[in-house]
Image 1 (spheres, rainbow, N blue to C red):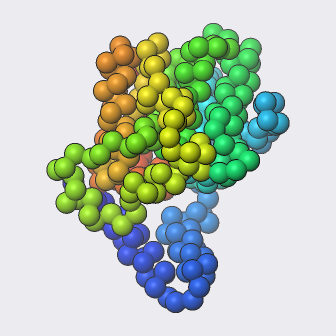
Image 2 (cartoon, rainbow, N blue to C red):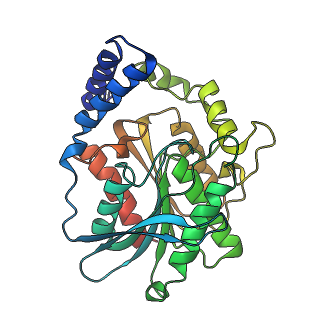
Length: 311
């Protein structure tokens, strides 16, 4: 299907907000206000039936902030979730963090831990600090006695998907226990990013926000500190993938990083890892950062949530 009209209207509105003149900072502030209004974040999201609590867990670089989501009733397991943001941006309040965590808790009947890992700044905070933080949250979750016999999943979106996969590799190799399910939304797991199939180029021309090669290089340099000799677990599509748990990978139809997600699916299958793939029709990168009022966004969250029980 073509790019969903929700996103084409969003692109037009952002362009109009940016075209109002003023400094670059003023333009971006107008775009941010437009985006907040467009996504109707001021309405909040119904968290009825889900107890939410902020806290922190110990980590090698100091306390790691987390937010937990506990649905009413009996639990089917637990999920550690990492938001996206190019390793540089994002927080627990963004829809890709907060709303997704609420819905994972409801739909999977899971205790969800959303991790506020340290963001790379290109200087002081670099790889492997964000992975260390996610693994510290995993260590805390895996050590909770109430889940000793329950399935534990780990997941994330975009850059958070890379961190979730890297943390799952650590859990496989050094514990404290391996994950039972891996839930990845439009993950960025390869550098260089694989090229898209040529047949997608005409449709991708409709998408104004793209991951071109220079943008990807900038993202990797800020995260790793360089664009050569990138460690295998930093962008873990180049790591050894056997022995990982059953994995669900979801991609956006109109997304330059779709090629990374699809290559990862093939690599996991080649390594003998059970893998399910879902392509969200008409969606652009980061569509989970919009409230799931669209059926396609709702279906993406359900696809991930069902992965805990399908292990």
